[in-house]
Image (cartoon, rainbow, N blue to C red; front, side):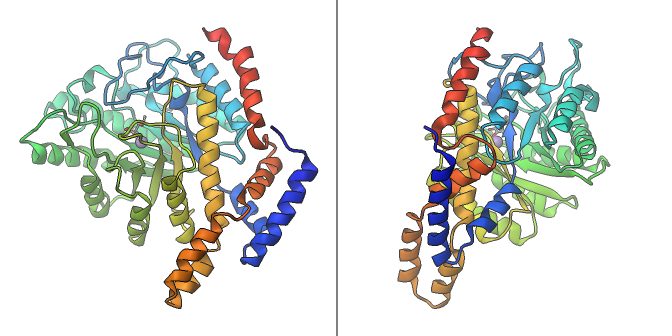
Length: 426
Ligand SMILES: C[C@H](O)[C@H](O)[C@@H](O)C(=O)CO
Ligand SMILES: [Mn+2]
């Protein structure tokens, strides 16, 4: 269903008046929205397969994309074309998040410890053409040297050395990507290390991980555009009893390191009743940057497509209430192979952006006023009133102004692309 411009505009003008009575200038909010970018994870497009011939389908590290929908991107050109198409349906200008396994090596075997910026030339050229930023992730899974379940915390010196070198190379690549594009490039380290069952060696593994990270971060790289970050996890498939890189471990690490390292919170990496939204203000109090991996855990870290749920909304509200959009970076992290992968990207990205818009439209000053007056009933009542403000009309205007389909009409375009492009990949 699409709406015509006059209707979008009329609805918007009415919404603008309503928000004005609550002290919110919707035109200003729309201006802010145009400057907000989220990082689209390339791995939704191919079920985290990557382009390395030797490791394709190897899996591991608890990364599991379930489903068998046709049309998975099989190479860089297909993945870029799918991303480009997805981005044409998402309002705003966004970044693309790469993993090291998306290197393009012209058929040559280049192991992860030998990767360089040259292997990402096509991505760079494409990003320059599109004037978009790229983020980066070393890939510490789906590799023979990760099959023991330990990488940077391995007790095997050879294995550890290999992964440290991969970590160093990845930082170099991310730094160069940032410099080439003149845009921040976040290099996020997530490792799968852990144990399926009880271990008596938790302390030993964590000491080793600390040493490995120290080596990776000691290597000098130009940080003009590079933001380092580390991502924790509570448990994973195959690491149910113990995860070396836990939340406490990384909190300790970033707060004691002399290097400037952000902390990454993945919404699927905590106990289901734990609120990631609540963690943001704690971390930024100490001037640390935060990377968010927006995801949707279904009973566990299942990496379902992001929807506009309470969790995602509260995360955006916390960032808005702290006015921290310059210190908190939004990225998507889910992989669903059971539905059209472009529908997955667009749904997740549009929902993430809706949460940000919803948060920016919140008359937070009225909540603060009520709280300062000690009128907590008013605070609660206002929160409830805000839920039915005409947010949808502002969202539609944002889509319209961004030249992307308004309403659900983007689904027709996905269907066309599916028929024309994806079906031929079967
Ligand atoms: C592929 C990603 O790097 C990965 O999903 C990681 O960020 C994660 O969340 C692992 O559970
Ligand atoms: Mn993640």
